[in-house]
Picture: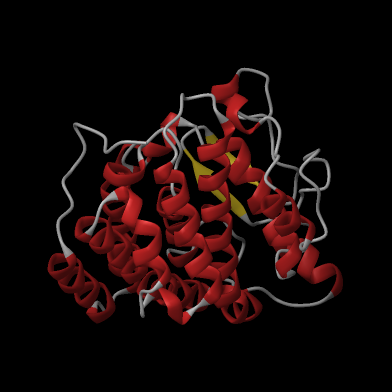
Amino acid sequence: MNPQSGLPRWSGAGAWAMRMRLIEGEADPVVRNALITSAYDDLSRETATLLGDIDANWLTFGKWASFTAGRFIRGEGAPVRWGAGKVAEGNVAIIADIAPQFVRFLELADAGSDEELSALVASDELLGRNATTLEAFASYAEALSIDNDVDDPASAQAMLRGNLLVAHHEQSLADDFVDDAMPLGGLFGVITTRFVTLEIPEGSLDLSHPVPLPRYLHGEQWPRALSEISDARLNALVRSYGHEWATTDGSAATTWEVFDERMGYIAQFFRAYQRDPSLRMPVAAAS
C-alpha cells in the first residue's frame, strides 16, 4: 500500500492541535458539529495519503456519522428533540479522544519507514493508553506493510479490523451519551431506534433493519476482497458481539442503546461499505 497521489498533504500535528482547540472552544453546537464533520473529512483524506483510499479508514465513516448527528443536533429527523444536547456532547467527546490518536499515527509514519511503523506504534505512549486503539493502529500498520493487488484480502481485512477496533473504542465512549440521548427501556427504546438512521451518499440507512446490499456493488453484499473473512482475530472480534460474519440477517440494531447490537450493525456496515468510493466525497456535496 503506497501513499496516494493527488490527495491533500499531511498538515502536521501543530495545525491539528489548533484545529481541535477551535472545535472544543466553539459554544454553538450546530457550528461545532460542522467543524467536527469537516475535520473528520480532512483527517480521513490525510490518513488516506498513508493508508491508501481503496479501503475507507475509520475517519471516513466517522464523517458521515457526524454529518448524521448534525441533523439530530438541529432537531431534524425525529418527532421531538430527543437528547440533542447529549448527541452534541458525544460528538465532540469522541473527536477529542480519537483525532489526536490518528494525528499521532501520522506523526509516527513520518518518523520512520513503513517497516518501522509497527514498532513505533507498539512503543508509543499516547497510542498505548488504550489497549483497543493500540491494537487498531497496529492493524493499520499491518495493512500498510502488505503490498498486494486490489483484490487480495489481507490488507482489506487488516483495515477492517483496524476500523472495527476504533469503532469498538468509540462506541464504548459513546455509551453514556447514547443512554442519555435515547429514552431507555422496553417498547419506548425500540420506538426510539426507529428514528436512528445513517446518512451516506447513497441514501438514508435505517439502522433497525439489516445492512442492505450496497448500491456500488450492484447486487453483491460485500466487496470481493472481503467476501470471505479468514482472519481469526476478526472472527473472534465479531463473535464477541454475539454475531457472525456469514450473513447480515442478524445485523439490525433493534435497540440502539445495546452495545453489542450497535457493534453487530457497525461490523457488517463497515465490511459492506469499506470500498464504496462515494464515501470519499465531501459531505458538502451530499447536503
